Length: 477
Length: 99
Image 1 (cartoon, chains in turn red, green):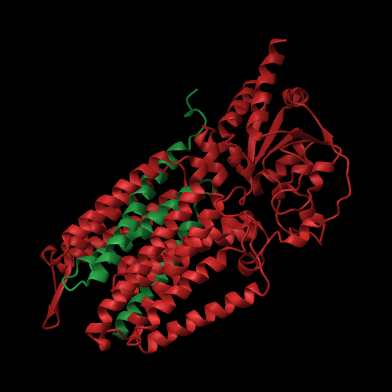
Image 2 (tube, rainbow over the protein chains, first blue to last red):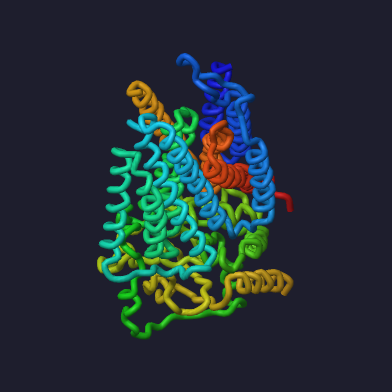
């Protein structure tokens, strides 16, 4: 039986790897999800039939008969399923970043609670049992679990706009955070050396929880893609540490996969913003001093929907640059109508997607795919940048910093060096924006003052639907 | 004991490298579904939560913590896989899109 269970775990780990591998292309991605589901099912079944029982004469007995407290387990399985299904189907696609943050919080909480339970359960029985790498793994699991739990809840609050999206900063913030983390780490080491000091554990857990909060509050909304990816990585690593503590290789594998996925995504996000991890976590991007930028009035040109529609109509290629404003205005379906309307006229329409557009990696792609825009029209930054000089109209909808030419030229700008979409190289630029107020990071965008730029003032959704209305009317005339 | 640790570190190292190589090839189009998929997969910690809760000697504390843990990860498993499927279904090529 023990062998069967181990083989089941091996199959399950293999399915998880396949599952991620199949995510490399939209055509195979549904197989990926299916493989993951089967892997998970096998793992859960294997856990029940190979439940560890007492060890007699050095041999570990296993079997489903050793499972106790069925009521608790089944009740939890039922409640979890009952909560999970409505979340999956009711949630709008614009809320995906919040849901992702929430699920990081849930996963991390579970790891932390299991670590806590494990600590208290093992320790009183036998102090000698909690030693060596098991206790080290346990404290890492709990530390990462608790800080990811509160950190993800904070991120979710910011994404849901329950909490202010701007960075919350105070004096000596980094020093306070560092001190707190050092104390938590010190307690962790103390516990690892002497696990019988149970009274330290609640303090350790409390500090980890607090550190999670403090780590995220100074981080602004525009940095959320990186932060979510980092939290993703931490949640995976805490599951991985649980694997070390419980002696489950499957947990180690699955946790490591999740951890490396979060790591890669956060590296991609950091590169796309030309910033380092430490800068994202401790830099408090978009701080107050930048909003005191020069208040000089610069001239710009604006246009009505009718004028904009006529320019779009005479174009032969259009690139649309979506940003977070699209998600806020829920304009994706209207953009699809615009896309159809232009495509019918034989105009080539593509979308230029910056890696950090939106609030999580790939956010824009999901929204546009939801609106049935074919995915081969969604083009990454590096591929589309060569197309801008030949493009008649670049239409910016709800994006700001990722189009700011200052990132190339102005060394004093906080976004200097960040790779941007070369929107300013298009023949005509149109920007749909509510007003001339600078964007989230408070950085003035030079793009808006170019001679070839037309500002289209209004709500993204309302303006795009006006554009759509203007287009057919002109064909009829 | 030590040999256990070495074995686990070995598994960890290999799994991390496989993860890095596999994820690197994932299309940026699918980064959001990828994240919710890896999230569902890391909810494999349900295994640990079940073992803690179902233990014959589980204390009241373990049962309560384990119960919350199972509920939280099962929510992740169910909503994670379903939502990933809902997302990847939306990615269509030209021609597949119904007018």
